[in-house]
Amino acid sequence: MTFSIAARCPRSGEFGIAVSSSSPAVAARCAHARAGVGVVATQNITDPTLGPMGLDLMATGLSAAEALAALRATAGHIEYRQLALVDAHGGTAAFSGTKTLGTHHAAEGPGVVAAGNMLKTAAVPEQMVAAFRALEVLPLGERLVRAMQAGLAAGGEAGPVHSAGLLVVRDVAWPVADLRVDWHETDPIGALAGLWAMWAPQMDAYVTRALDPSTAPSYGVPGDPGR
Image (tube, rainbow, N blue to C red; front, top):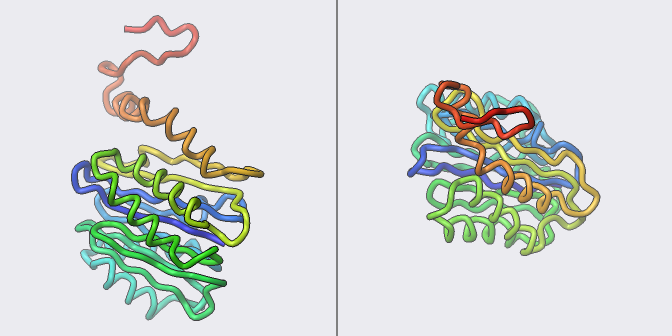
């Protein structure tokens, strides 16, 4: 039902996650990230509370592996869950419970982890990680979107996907990118790529407007005199 990729960019300090599913509004349930702390994907038969719980554990200094161990020891119905975590140092961890649906797999690399269930082929997460690692010069959001496209090209889910999302955090208290395609009949990942292409050139300007409007670029809307 879901495949995702979560990562840390050592150059920018950003953390991010991209996710897609056959079900609606997947990012609202499955994508969790916190600036300076890490990322958690919680999927399969999803328990959204595991995202904040995992981030809280890593915020205390636990590694991704240690936080995952704590979740496995304390969370109810853990056999139904699939989890993927990245910590503040780029450490990764992944878990697929015994009741994870269909063909499922997880793949890890330096600072990146991909996981999926109900996959067309178990090779999908490996292809996502490989695509992500091949694009080191690009911004994190772009790398995540392209990795999702690579996962889809590798087979993606066994059935069609209908929703997708991208979440990126960095050195401010809010997400710098929180893009969602909550339902698309044919190509939510393509629609997400289009949203990212529109948002990426404006992202820094919106951060500046929040921190110091006097130095922000013009708003670029009708009636804006510009500066």
